[in-house]
Length: 280
Figure 1 (cartoon, rainbow, N blue to C red):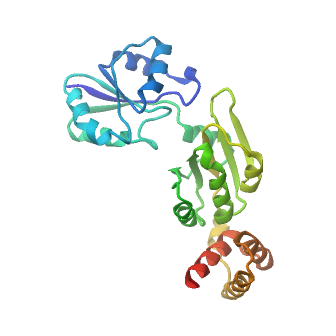
Figure 2: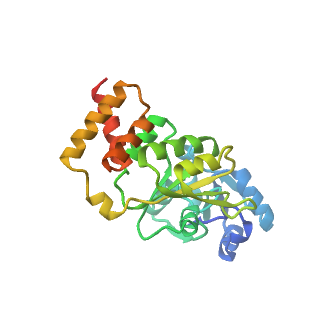
Figure 3: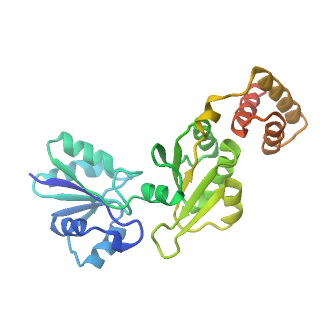
């Protein structure tokens, strides 16, 4: 009976592959890779010639039975394109079913873009929420962010270059001017870590390229605990209704009411969204 190795691979710099990972990849009978083309480049660099099969979000249901059968006769390594399998990756299904079938599962730890970005951000990693990739659709993305407006945890988000600006705009609108760290091409030749606010990041990344990890500071516990008074909420509602009637944009209306009443932009924006639903 074989063993399933969950192997971490570099997120950019090939020197970050551990000697143990290199040894395991050369000893297994088969490698299940997210994209065999990407993994083939790593294996060529190592001089390793081991059979591979693709295992990804599109074919995982078809591949699983055959991979479990392969485990019956030899060791199998599970790898993703970059980082640890099963983190924003379909590998968790294979791990769960292999363990349920009685196969031994062993981790071969490696680099993670999540912890790498956290360590570079200067923000606390004592308590953080990893969100993977936010929804592609704007409405769903904003809804996801609205549920995090009062979270005191540091938030970690993956994002593709073609969606970065839209995501930053939604972060600004929903979470406000949070301190954040935007990490680009981590461990690669053109690595960049931008530290600032969402609006500053929007101005900086005019033509985003590469792979991004966003680290966003959570609200302070005191700010989360002390909400606005009933009088503030009533006045804010009246002001927002008047501004909406006058055709003022959401961003400007939220800023005006937040500055005038001393309420957080997150809370004011929530009220704006809720009032919009009731007026439809």
